[in-house]
Image 1 (cartoon, rainbow over the protein chains, first blue to last red):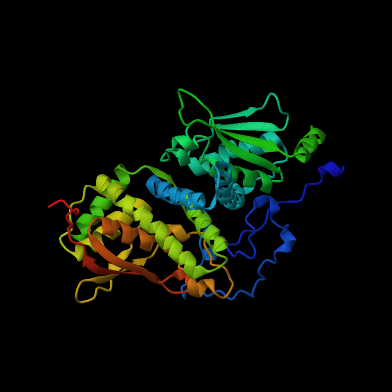
Image 2 (tube, helix red, strand yellow):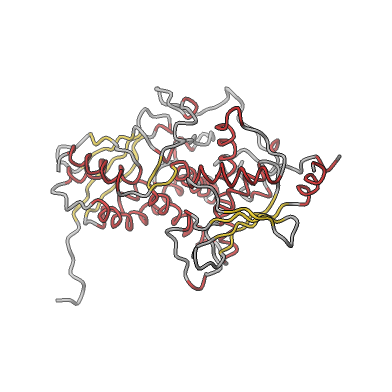
Length: 235
Length: 191
């Protein structure tokens, strides 16, 4: 039965406070290590109208839209900033992954909250991957993912396919960096959602040559062994 | 250009000419950027403000072209018109908000933008560390954007936040000051 036990959860409540947030997702301390602020002990000031985030409905911005250009500008700055700190493409992708990871942690909670009564905790690999390909993808990008495949060679690998990632639509990768795929950012989001659902894994983004879809991207999802063991028990 | 005309143009462009994405993707992406900066600068919020302003400046330099191409607006006759254009068209097409232009100085060189809504700050609460609420200007990237964009149309401005609801203030206010018009300079050696 021991393999039914979830591995150490990498999920940690996010805080921009650097002393709490460790940044490297796989090395984040377990939940108990960071002390959540106790109710009533907050020293934060609020506007007299008390228009804090707790007074607003969480679904308020569910369907609102912003300019795609605004996203592209911000994402571009994120990449440039990350690029200054790294030496290679792999490092850069890792940085982007970490930035996405912080988003995925929040989105998982938000999306489950919004599913309301129909929300459930996925226990099976296929179920959680469908959640990502449908619910998560539709919310973020307004469309489901273009495909979901299981690797033939490796039991623990799955592939989520996006023919034209929204995040890459304003990015042209220089020739000497052709290995770079900035959708590593989205890979980080996916990884956080899977980790947070207790399907620990690594997710990486890879450009795949396709004449029809020049920016086709495959997210390679590699689960940890514990996930497969649990899957076998549940089968 | 009157304020109502600017509002009409902003509305029109937003509806017909802007590719859109889910707002929360933008909000969370910005949040991730700020959080990363806070971490990288080890809680030196002054440095974070500076970095955000710099990022915004870089964006502004490029954003102005996108703005002009999409909105087809011409040269503003005076700084008051510029202010209306920024609020009703600029903020409208990029962030779908129209901050209120107010608090003009008598020389017409200084105004405030009051933000009732700020999509960048949805979901945001500043760290409860006793410093962030005094030091961090969470949306400081917007100041940089204005500075960069206006510089490209020959206006040197100073833009900074004067208050922010995230800090417990009752309003979110950005103060914009025209420092000078940048004269056209001939390229050196081209006489």
